[in-house]
Length: 495
Image 1 (cartoon, rainbow, N blue to C red):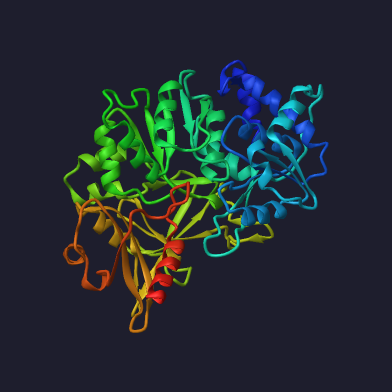
Image 2 (tube, one colour):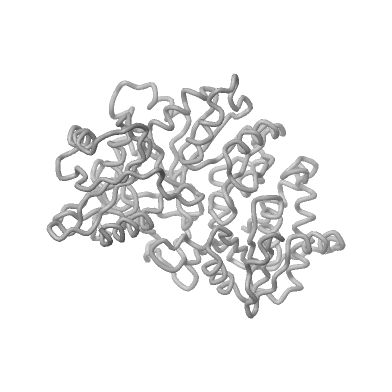
């Protein structure tokens, strides 16, 4: 099943309902098919996109599907040299670029550059073909990974992966005509793609902001009467600051999902107090799994938030239970032994939405299992706790130490606004535990070390402390731990 069928059946059923901005479902399909006819005239094997959020994103996503070519959105926040390196890798392609970004693109053999305004003019002069026939292609979307530890890889998402995820998690046209989803996550992130597909299939109108800024986010949510939204943890904290003193903050909002990074418990607790009318959902997933694979529901949030029992209360820090139709296991270092509840290992997942594929390389095993490279554990009731990337594990004197549990402990200190824990080279232990603190008030290393020792064993107490005004995150809320580590290593060498 192709992703375009999601739009086709919605347009056939509710063609006059608004889909995105001022476009109805019928108008979006017509526009996408006109764009597809134009794409099929190009000497291209991919449709690349470099630009901000807006109606062109769903237009090109579905147009690429109709034309039988992969849609490949590119991270416009990259430095020009890295951006151009990715553009070159899309060849032969047609690259649709925001007018103001066109000057950043160098000429590349096999890449035709078309500005957004030129494409809009082209579409206005075309009519939809009378007899529309899609071209087949298994690949729906190519998404470049962040490449924090090497060159970005092109993750392959096939139509069957994406439609399996959508149809397994969303009921067709279950949304009311008054419902609107605010999308602030960029198109080159899997959440930006899944937001389009799930909203279209569910019948929910899409409202975009070009790029995230907390005041604009809140203003757009009010203006568009947004009922649903997805954010990353760093976004939520800034949104709460923006709306905290309103009489009825985000009064139209009904549901807010979050993901893309660890959610500090104080932030979600604050959100639930400030916005008691909102259903909060924690969604954990990866690009290679076509978005969400585990979900902490709104009911789970409330039960954990209101409970005085520690096993239930701590689930507020979990990502919930695996989605129906997916299998999830925690495995030991050998990659074969399945671990029981309570024991930490690597998260493996299997199911039809799981791609586990990069261009030219399949990374699922013979039985279809995908190794996520995320560490985690399951409790007795099947709730999943994600500890972070296995690449980030600190190896101190042969002991594996998860940064996540130390970070969670430090966030519980009243003076800590944000924290990152990582391993730095050490001649004695191989690596030493280092903590980078963004503080709310002056606090000593000794006080923070004592706080860690009060909740964790002494070997997990940071031996090096750094204080910074802020931590480096990318625009989708991922802590750039490698960037921070490289900088600290350089500083220590210079010292």
